[in-house]
Image (cartoon, rainbow, N blue to C red):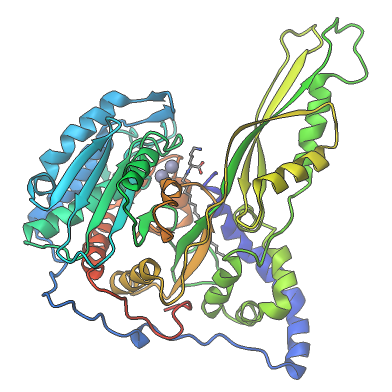
Length: 524
Ligand SMILES: CCCCCCCC/C=C\CCCCCCCC(=O)N[C@@H](CCCCN)C(=O)O
Ligand SMILES: [Zn+2]
Ligand SMILES: [Zn+2]
């Protein structure tokens, strides 16, 4: 997926407003005769306090020396170019160096009696942290060490320099995802140095090939845990963020926890035809036939599945953040659902949330300028909406192409992920929600979503039903554009906040049940 598309969603507000103007007359007219619900949600103060689990809480206060050390450690991590180009081509030298670096910066993680460290498939790392209360089901914090490639072109500083400038650390991996790798270990290291012993056991899993498949890292770790009969209460990975200034109708930042994830398919389409002299071309060549076929795919959107995923809950729970008339529209999707369904199609990110997407990503054909091409091949990358199945999608594709001369080959495929619970009993979701409230008081809504990209947590579906994707980082459109793009950077303050969030979350997990208000699925 192209994360930068999210930034384009900023333009959605204009489209939404234009369409909203069109419906406002209808709203007012209908409002006279219908009793429309308006958004009323509990404020942050209405959330009950944490119950303390019998131990004293360690305050998230870090000394100047610790703060300097944590930012220097992140810079050093960025300087190791742990680039994954493909499953077969990963910078294993940098990954090995990274493995040697970890015990140097996080010595307590490697010398504490209740922590066990394992290297999986040479470059991935699994830490088992044994809690004092075996009755509490363990959980996992997940991140990945590998990064996507970055050339120096267009960067303000070299992408693997880890340079600090104007309060930011620059470099590939500062947001995706060495910030999480380092913040998780950093938070636990700081807790250990304060003699913390968790009550709830947990795992820290650091994969080394997420950007190319996760099959050697996360997938192997998941298989290892499954073979040991381990079940996890919940797992937290990347893939949800705190969005700020993305929509002009919403002034305050809101947190998105992805509770599901689209499936994926790489499908190759091929047309073969007889080669020959280009001076006497046939009416159609393999290139022309295939180009027409993929053009039909591009022009014919897959069905709009709005209402069958968490998108509806997302909008309903965001309603209170908008002003009139959007707040009324979003609170009354029972009547305005069909209009929203169309509005959401207007921008790439919201469109990706409501349907299976088809991206034409590769096209290969032709062998010489004056030879009729014997073969044309195109590869399309599909992201499958959780309400659809792989066979359904394949059938729709074939019906759209509607040409027997086109052959299909599924190069790789996986199902959409099931929806993880986000009700008041969902421990992992409520733990995140509560910790967001504690650490980001400016965030007034926490909403569920489908992750439109793929993450390593999908490999763990056999050992947990609570798969959540959330990074405690506030992203503005420019920051989102830098994922896999130019000038990826994190402010030192944002990184410290991420460490603080994990420091709090690990301690918050030491309860049997997270206290939640009645309207637990609504905003804070
Ligand atoms: C009305 C407000 C709506 C805001 C909703 C935003 C929803 C945001 C959901 C997800 C954010 C995107 C997070 C993307 C993480 C993607 C990580 C990634 O790039 N993964 C790769 C994995 C490649 C593995 C090899 N096949 C990918 O997806 O391509
Ligand atoms: Zn990532
Ligand atoms: Zn990535």
